[in-house]
Length: 497
Image (cartoon, rainbow, N blue to C red; front, side, top):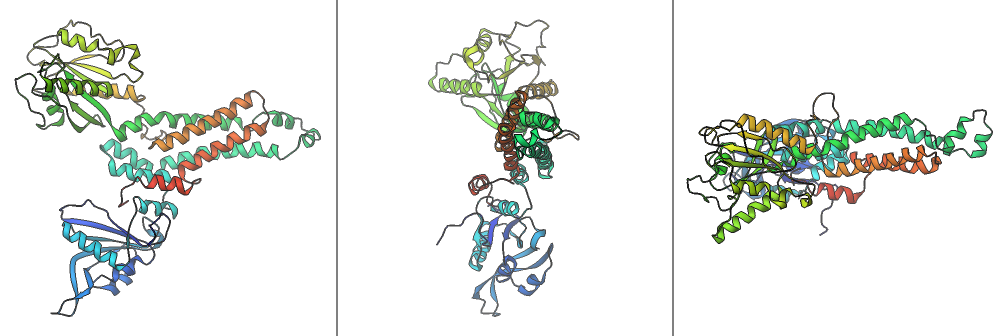
């Protein structure tokens, strides 16, 4: 039997809710004849077949191969509600039905088995979204935003994904592309005439155009400026989508685990008065300032003798090198010690040779409820980046609002500023690395075209670059695509999407 492929017309099914015990589960179906196939294992087949689109029908999923000897009816599997979708008024643009059944693991397996026996095959990853794209229900930017919504970690992440799903990014890309198409069309008009034809015209400006003066140059410059705004949005959008690694570090017993628990608002890390309680790192996702953060509690930084503690300290140092932001705790009761100073002198983190991706450090004077932040502090020795010292108490929560504000400002500075791309009037942000690569390609080609025009190079050298820029924008929305590109893109989606 041939393996299923994207683009065939087979009726497909997939669970749209996670496997496990729950009150309800949803099984999605789509494809030619999907409603009739569901009707073949439904207790009220005629009612289902006659149901209009966007309506629901109550009944039972049954197994027609097994007849109940007591009533002569097909054996019942589960009591369900079937939502019917007709033609173009569905997510995929195909006929389909969503089955709401009870959420037990055995129940879902039995309903899926009955539907497979009826003629459905299991959907490939992202195949529902693929069919929506192929049937003109979604462009590729909106298809990608579907998965962004599935994995959104904060309300802000969700808001940005919803804006792309609503078509804001698609509209911006199409608007920029329309500008470039006008420039390209004007350029190619002149390429359709020979130099002799221009020589014979009464208007000598044609010679200027043929020599490289770019028609509608102002439109090309506007397109380039809008593309650059989109490209600049990607780092912040990536932060909202993927989050940042924030590492809590400090000497043993500085209060790292207490701060970890305080920020999570739950007791995840063990806290004792004994230094070195945390020997390995712990992590959890948390939302602060609208950003999803991978918050990590680490073993205390010191010259450990115990072999297990040594491993914990080494792992802490590896995390520090990979961090986007470090919350370094100073024990206010102990003051700024030689071990604290050693952290700020660590060449792996702060030397000029440590690379361009140096972490931002926020210094926290912990236990400020017992020992307030002094007016004079030894200068932290990190040579670059914000090293502002804040007084906090991980025990009481004192200073945490200020910490959240400082953390938010530090991340915005690191990832490209505080421009809120989802605010009204602002350009939408880019939602994927694929989009960013294609925007960069369009910028490169358009910049090259403008540079050639500046040197008065012939338009037959300029036009191919403009055409490449237009094609790159077409790839973002899916107007220009190949089967290989589409298969790669949708294969990373969830099965039920």
